[in-house]
Amino acid sequence: MPEDMTGGMTVISKRAFENAAALDLSAGNAAQILATIPARSFSDILMRFAPEEAGREKLVDGLCGNDPSRSRASMDKKVRGWLSGKYQPTAREDLLELCFILKLSVEEADAFLAATSEEGMHWRDPKELTYAFALRKGMTYPEATALLTRVIPKENVKTKETREAFTSVVQREAAGLETEGELKQYLLDAGEKLGTFHNRAYQQFTEFLSLLEQPHAVSVEKEDNFTVRRIVETYLDNRFPSDWDKKKLDDKRRGILAGWPEEVALSRMKTGKIDVNRKTLILLFLATDGGEEITDDWQEDVYWDEDGEESDADADFRSSYIRMNQMLSSCGYRMLDPRSPFDWVVIYCLRVSSDPDAMEGLSERLSEMLEVLFSASSLETE
Image 1 (tube, one colour):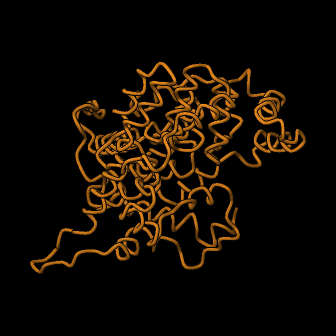
Image 2 (cartoon, one colour; image 1 turned 30 degrees about the horizontal axis):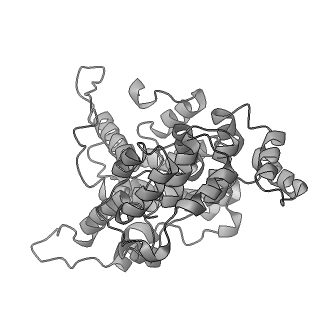
Image 3 (spheres, rainbow, N blue to C red; image 1 turned 135 degrees about the horizontal axis):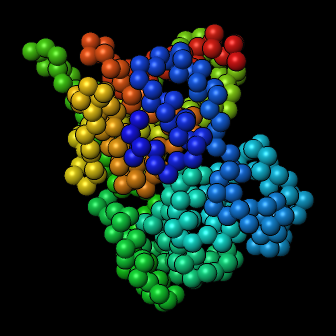
């Protein structure tokens, strides 16, 4: 496996990546390997970003210090649950508060949020833009929440959000704000650029959906366009064996299923009623084989096999992997993490067979993997 694809990974992550990307690995063997991959715990993430601030006492002190009305016993129980791996914080506000308790820089907070919630700092969200400003200025969490009440414009003066505004523009402009007054004026003037939805993710989502709505006909007869229901039934829904038992799922399988898109959610994403989530975007990438070629701003080298011939399987995998990460990064989402069970399955699916006669694509690999992972026999043997 080319070193540039695993650079910066820990030993455990690199091993997990190499296992997922092994050539000609059957779905059955892949499921057995996945069971041995240690998922990254919340405690692991805390220690990575702020080892000196991640101790139980300091976290409890920080939570109680931010809100004196909180019960110390309750906060202690919550933190013990986080550190033991029993559960981890999922509420966005909890994670944002932890960025202040851990005394993270804006860059560290962005990475921490991505590691814990799959989404980095959302600069177009007025609240998170304000919190990023507060982190940059060294404020505490209570100071940041107080700042928020002073600078956020009233609802009746906020202009309609546009789908043409992207995070990179707002982030660049926000980086130049130095005073509370400048921040308040910016939030007022840039109202149409701001919002809680991910515009680039929506743009990519609609491109993928368009490809699935108008499939290429395999005969001379015109093929009907796919509805959202048919897209879900064809590519996203009918992938679980009929005999699977949801009650027997372990944490890894529950994580793979969490947030899996169904017809109503996909329709609401299409009409802009709800935000496009990371998992949906990844699944649509797999359903369309990525939709488009890699862009020029991401380097794609050529690799050769032992006989001096270019390896098509390696080149295809590398291209899909790079394009997937490019898409996720540009949309503000965490790139593929081989320690995440769902992401591990995705990496496995990107590694299509080396057999040119197999006619196996990314979507077919996913179907086979889910069939094995969620079959009754698989759940009974673990």
